[in-house]
Amino acid sequence: MKRFIVVLVLALIPVIPANAAPIYTFPVAGCKTSYGKYHHDYPATDIKTKFGCAFVAPINGVVEDVSTKDLWSGKTNLGQHRGGLSISIIGEDGVRYYGSHLSKIEPGIAPGVVVVSGQKLGEVGRTGSARGIPKPHLHFGISYPTQPGDWEIRRGVVAPWRFLDAWKAGKDLSPAKTVARAKAKAGK
Image 1 (cartoon, rainbow, N blue to C red):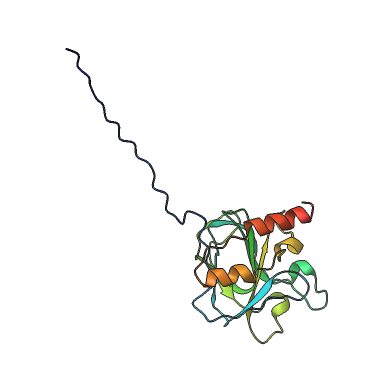
Image 2: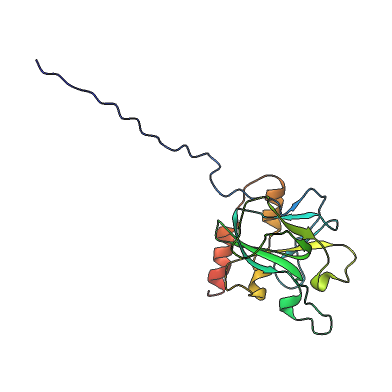
Protein backbone atom coordinates (compact mmCIF):
# COMPACT_ATOMS: atom_id res chain seq x y z
CA MET A 1 0.00 0.00 0.00
CA LYS A 2 1.39 3.36 -1.02
CA ARG A 3 1.19 6.40 1.19
CA PHE A 4 0.93 9.92 -0.04
CA ILE A 5 1.99 12.84 2.01
CA VAL A 6 0.16 16.00 1.25
CA VAL A 7 1.90 19.19 2.14
CA LEU A 8 -0.08 22.38 2.23
CA VAL A 9 1.86 25.49 1.57
CA LEU A 10 0.22 28.74 2.49
CA ALA A 11 1.50 31.65 0.56
CA LEU A 12 0.95 35.12 1.80
CA ILE A 13 -0.36 37.01 -1.15
CA PRO A 14 -0.37 40.72 -0.61
CA VAL A 15 -3.80 42.23 -0.84
CA ILE A 16 -3.66 45.21 -3.16
CA PRO A 17 -6.47 47.65 -2.51
CA ALA A 18 -8.60 48.77 -5.44
CA ASN A 19 -7.29 52.31 -4.98
CA ALA A 20 -3.59 51.38 -5.25
CA ALA A 21 -2.98 54.25 -7.67
CA PRO A 22 -1.48 57.40 -6.19
CA ILE A 23 -3.80 59.21 -3.83
CA TYR A 24 -4.21 62.87 -4.74
CA THR A 25 -5.10 65.67 -2.34
CA PHE A 26 -6.31 69.17 -3.16
CA PRO A 27 -3.24 71.40 -2.47
CA VAL A 28 -4.96 73.82 -0.05
CA ALA A 29 -6.38 72.35 3.15
CA GLY A 30 -8.80 73.72 5.70
CA CYS A 31 -9.85 76.85 3.84
CA LYS A 32 -12.41 77.94 1.27
CA THR A 33 -10.82 78.35 -2.18
CA SER A 34 -11.56 79.50 -5.70
CA TYR A 35 -9.51 79.21 -8.89
CA GLY A 36 -9.90 79.84 -12.57
CA LYS A 37 -9.53 77.72 -15.65
CA TYR A 38 -7.06 80.12 -17.22
CA HIS A 39 -3.81 81.79 -16.26
CA HIS A 40 -2.34 84.82 -17.99
CA ASP A 41 0.30 83.40 -20.36
CA TYR A 42 1.05 79.77 -19.49
CA PRO A 43 -0.88 76.77 -18.12
CA ALA A 44 -1.20 77.09 -14.33
CA THR A 45 -3.73 78.46 -11.88
CA ASP A 46 -3.89 80.77 -8.89
CA ILE A 47 -5.84 79.23 -6.02
CA LYS A 48 -7.30 82.18 -4.13
CA THR A 49 -7.77 81.72 -0.40
CA LYS A 50 -7.00 83.33 2.94
CA PHE A 51 -3.51 84.30 4.06
CA GLY A 52 -1.89 81.49 6.06
CA CYS A 53 -3.98 78.60 4.73
CA ALA A 54 -2.08 75.33 4.47
CA PHE A 55 -0.36 74.39 1.21
CA VAL A 56 -0.22 70.58 1.31
CA ALA A 57 1.48 67.92 -0.80
CA PRO A 58 -0.98 66.86 -3.51
CA ILE A 59 0.62 63.38 -3.65
CA ASN A 60 3.34 61.31 -1.97
CA GLY A 61 6.70 62.39 -3.30
CA VAL A 62 10.10 63.94 -2.73
CA VAL A 63 10.83 67.64 -2.33
CA GLU A 64 12.88 68.77 -5.33
CA ASP A 65 13.29 72.52 -5.01
CA VAL A 66 12.69 75.04 -2.21
CA SER A 67 13.04 78.82 -2.44
CA THR A 68 13.29 80.05 1.14
CA LYS A 69 14.06 83.70 0.33
CA ASP A 70 11.86 86.16 -1.50
CA LEU A 71 14.27 87.68 -4.03
CA TRP A 72 11.66 89.26 -6.31
CA SER A 73 12.03 92.92 -7.20
CA GLY A 74 9.53 94.91 -9.24
CA LYS A 75 12.47 96.77 -10.79
CA THR A 76 13.99 93.67 -12.36
CA ASN A 77 10.94 91.32 -12.40
CA LEU A 78 13.15 88.29 -13.07
CA GLY A 79 11.12 85.18 -13.91
CA GLN A 80 13.05 82.91 -11.57
CA HIS A 81 12.14 85.17 -8.62
CA ARG A 82 8.45 85.77 -9.39
CA GLY A 83 7.29 82.87 -7.22
CA GLY A 84 8.84 84.21 -4.02
CA LEU A 85 8.80 81.47 -1.40
CA SER A 86 8.07 78.26 -3.27
CA ILE A 87 8.27 74.47 -3.20
CA SER A 88 8.44 71.83 -5.95
CA ILE A 89 7.91 68.15 -5.32
CA ILE A 90 8.30 65.19 -7.64
CA GLY A 91 5.30 62.96 -7.03
CA GLU A 92 5.42 59.18 -6.98
CA ASP A 93 3.61 59.46 -10.33
CA GLY A 94 6.70 61.12 -11.88
CA VAL A 95 5.02 64.54 -12.14
CA ARG A 96 6.36 67.81 -10.70
CA TYR A 97 3.97 69.86 -8.53
CA TYR A 98 4.82 73.48 -7.75
CA GLY A 99 3.36 75.92 -5.25
CA SER A 100 4.51 79.51 -4.86
CA HIS A 101 3.79 82.93 -3.29
CA LEU A 102 3.97 81.22 0.12
CA SER A 103 4.19 83.22 3.34
CA LYS A 104 5.97 80.42 5.17
CA ILE A 105 7.69 77.10 4.51
CA GLU A 106 7.33 74.41 7.16
CA PRO A 107 10.45 73.52 9.16
CA GLY A 108 12.26 70.50 7.71
CA ILE A 109 10.94 70.95 4.16
CA ALA A 110 14.09 70.79 2.03
CA PRO A 111 15.30 69.11 -1.17
CA GLY A 112 15.35 65.32 -0.80
CA VAL A 113 12.76 65.16 1.99
CA VAL A 114 10.03 62.54 1.46
CA VAL A 115 6.51 63.91 1.89
CA VAL A 116 3.10 62.27 1.97
CA SER A 117 -0.13 63.33 0.35
CA GLY A 118 -1.85 65.94 2.51
CA GLN A 119 1.30 66.84 4.49
CA LYS A 120 1.61 70.56 5.19
CA LEU A 121 4.47 72.08 3.21
CA GLY A 122 3.88 75.77 3.83
CA GLU A 123 1.32 78.55 4.06
CA VAL A 124 -0.37 80.64 1.38
CA GLY A 125 0.81 84.23 1.14
CA ARG A 126 1.83 87.10 -1.12
CA THR A 127 5.55 86.70 -1.79
CA GLY A 128 7.27 87.26 -5.10
CA SER A 129 5.27 89.05 -7.77
CA ALA A 130 2.10 88.58 -5.67
CA ARG A 131 3.26 91.22 -3.16
CA GLY A 132 1.02 93.93 -4.55
CA ILE A 133 -2.05 91.73 -5.03
CA PRO A 134 -4.73 92.27 -2.36
CA LYS A 135 -5.98 88.64 -2.28
CA PRO A 136 -3.42 85.99 -1.23
CA HIS A 137 -3.16 82.97 -3.47
CA LEU A 138 -1.22 79.81 -4.17
CA HIS A 139 0.22 79.72 -7.67
CA PHE A 140 -0.09 76.04 -8.58
CA GLY A 141 1.69 74.43 -11.52
CA ILE A 142 1.95 70.89 -12.87
CA SER A 143 4.87 69.92 -15.13
CA TYR A 144 7.38 67.26 -16.01
CA PRO A 145 10.63 67.06 -14.05
CA THR A 146 13.66 68.87 -15.43
CA GLN A 147 16.69 70.27 -13.68
CA PRO A 148 16.09 71.79 -10.23
CA GLY A 149 15.70 75.55 -10.54
CA ASP A 150 14.13 75.40 -14.01
CA TRP A 151 11.52 78.07 -13.28
CA GLU A 152 9.98 78.21 -16.76
CA ILE A 153 8.91 74.56 -16.70
CA ARG A 154 8.16 74.22 -12.98
CA ARG A 155 5.62 77.06 -13.04
CA GLY A 156 3.33 74.83 -15.14
CA VAL A 157 2.99 73.12 -18.54
CA VAL A 158 -0.50 71.62 -18.28
CA ALA A 159 -3.71 73.31 -17.16
CA PRO A 160 -4.34 72.01 -13.63
CA TRP A 161 -8.01 72.96 -13.17
CA ARG A 162 -9.43 69.59 -14.33
CA PHE A 163 -7.24 67.77 -11.83
CA LEU A 164 -7.97 70.26 -9.06
CA ASP A 165 -11.71 69.80 -9.66
CA ALA A 166 -11.32 66.02 -9.32
CA TRP A 167 -9.11 66.18 -6.22
CA LYS A 168 -11.46 68.65 -4.55
CA ALA A 169 -14.29 66.15 -5.16
CA GLY A 170 -12.18 63.32 -3.67
CA LYS A 171 -11.50 61.66 -7.02
CA ASP A 172 -8.11 60.22 -7.95
CA LEU A 173 -7.45 61.76 -11.38
CA SER A 174 -3.79 61.51 -12.44
CA PRO A 175 -2.14 64.17 -14.62
CA ALA A 176 0.72 61.78 -15.56
CA LYS A 177 -0.44 61.00 -19.12
CA THR A 178 -1.27 64.65 -19.85
CA VAL A 179 2.16 65.70 -18.57
CA ALA A 180 3.88 62.97 -20.66
CA ARG A 181 2.12 64.29 -23.79
CA ALA A 182 3.22 67.87 -22.98
CA LYS A 183 6.79 66.67 -22.51
CA ALA A 184 6.77 64.78 -25.84
CA LYS A 185 5.27 67.79 -27.60
CA ALA A 186 8.07 69.96 -26.19
CA GLY A 187 10.64 67.45 -27.52
CA LYS A 188 12.03 66.70 -24.07
